[in-house]
Length: 473
Image 1 (cartoon, rainbow, N blue to C red):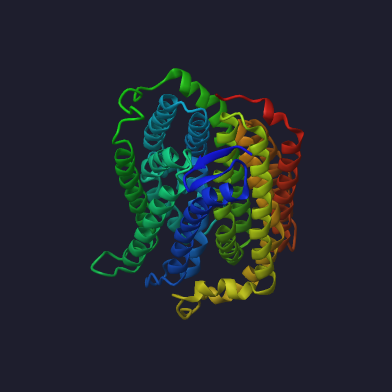
Image 2 (cartoon, rainbow, N blue to C red):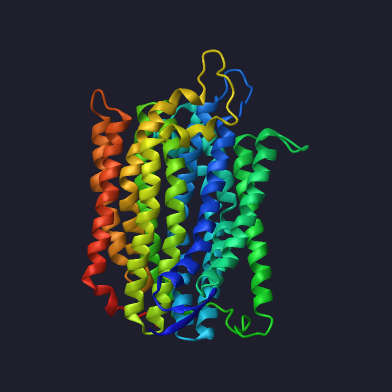
């Protein structure tokens, strides 16, 4: 078996060890992002605005997930397109073409700057969308505040992801891990200070949580920029010579990267609409769903890091003309993904209440005529059993879709995600919500069916082998 160098040593191409040492730092990186999100919610669950007639703790916890998902949805297309730099860089790295690699990075940076500046102006439109979803006045005010600040930080989000591809695409994933862990620590510390007003900082509540996230992203940009300069001290990648926009490379981004970005967009827009439908039932259903999705993110977001590793290695092996290694990498990834989600599923089935206890860490007693977070935990525990069931299919969907994207097959994942997200989950959920006696558990059945179908469809597409005939390099 041919030996290929990785960031952690020399391992057989397509081997379990190669995948493990490339994937582990990215899993930790994605896990740190998940922890960042959950930390926001845990602290906000215990935040008391202290204003008579103003928002309660449940209003805030009901607002944060729809607002963050809306921001993620509007950034999906540019972010997914920019992140496809990872595939270009990995294939050019495998083909040993550093000039093209550098050009691919620069195009991602230019796209990040332009699209990030445009996204800053989306904020004023958010209030109308939240109101149209039928959310209460207090929830809408919190959603709008959180979303608008995240929009102002969009350039930092996109640029940091573009710069990170320079390392992840070359399998130097430990660098990405270190930067993301540092930014997570920055975010959590600033969360505590800016949400509650500690250490002389202003007490900003949900606005403080959003501001902490934006400042953490800015720290990532600074760290990645310095590390790229340090890594290129010998001038191997000739950054200045390839800094200009390239029409040829940008055309490739539009051809392969935009469908990848659309894949993220249609998936998240379907889930965002699903959240709005849940919110139309009542505030408590929305808050319970947000807690369940927060626990789900601890399982799913590390899978995204794992998927990035699969996409990187499959792209690298294809660039190096090692198709059998790309297949072995995918098979090993399926095994690791199923073990991870299967273990998490067992814990959620038998210990759902234990998973939700962290949300009581900062919780306070309910105010008169109000409720505490504890009131919605039984329903959230029931929803976690749905999470346990569909998590294994989530692993299949992420692994096989990532392998397809690494090979350049970006259109099919987008198409099947669009059809399943809207025809299996969102439209049926809306129809159910119009029925008398509709419950949040009934809506979650559609979500579970959607993820199950995605896992099976991505698996069958990979088995077809059509991705083997695509050539990016």
